[in-house]
Each structure stands twice: as structure tokens, then as C-alpha cells.
Image (cartoon, rainbow, N blue to C red):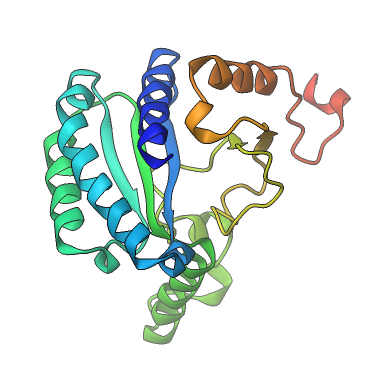
Length: 211
């Protein structure tokens, strides 16, 4: 199943690049996934290393840039080295930003942001009155790519699973029963088309958007 999921990753990255998506974040391995059987975790780490090695040339040709959010230091040495090398190799590319959430948990990210802000307040370099949403955004790991406009949830799951909790406050949500290994370009374009038909009001009424 995990190997089949890699095929879907390849298809969705290609599709996102074709239609000019700025950034695509894939929930690759959550902080809670460490609780899975050790044999499965080990296999996933090996698959990550293999995939980075196999896909780096194609990603480079497609002008894709790689970034990673999450506790990367928790990963074994081989994946960490593979990630670093891939990020460096693709760093000058200017197309789609492929953002992998690895060993990632949104609650942990929010706590780290709060700790960073609290430290600045304690040091006297930040006034508490200066703390607002924009400032908080700048202390999150996604600060360079902004907040997602669309969240796609596969497999019919009806939960967020500790993913980008702050960032998806106003994201449109698309839920499909299709399993990730079966989620391809067609399904991706259907999600985009569904998103394009929605009215994003951000708390306003329709009439206000027409003004």
C-alpha cells in the first residue's frame, strides 16, 4: 500500500505543477505514526530514502523545490541525509514547492511557536501587544509558503489528524472516499474543480464580495 502511494505522490506532484499550484503539502509521516509497529516504521523510513533517491532527477527536471516541516531530527540518519541532499539539490528551482510533513504534529508546531514568542517577550525584544495573527504565522514552519486554500482528505476520513490546525482555519475541505493509493490526476482535478465552484467568504456575506 505504501509503495502504491508513491505512485499517487508522483501523479499529484506532476498535476499540481501542470496547473500552477504554488505549494503542495503532503502529510507523509505524523508524529503519532512513531507509535506504529517498529517493522512498519522501519520499512517506511527505508521507502522514504529509496523514493528520494529515485525521484530527485525527475523532480529537478520538473523545477520542483523541496521543503520539509516536522521534527526531522527524530528521523534516522539515512532519511535525514537523504532529505538534506534533496533539498540542497532542488534549492534553486522556482516551480512547485513540494512540502513534506515528516514526523509532523500541528499541536507540537503550535507549542514551539508559542515557546519561541514567549522567549522573545521574556528577553524584552517583543512586546506582548505586538502579538497578532501575522506574527504568529511567522513563527510557524510554514511561514514561507502561507496557509493552504484547499485541504484534501482521502479514504473518507472525517478527522484532521493533527495536521496544520492553525493554517487550515479558512481552508476549503474536500473529502473523498478514494484511498490514497487510488488517488490520481483525475481525482485531484475533481477536487480542484470542486474548490473552484465554492464561494470563499471569510466570514462575510455574498453581497460584500461583490462590492
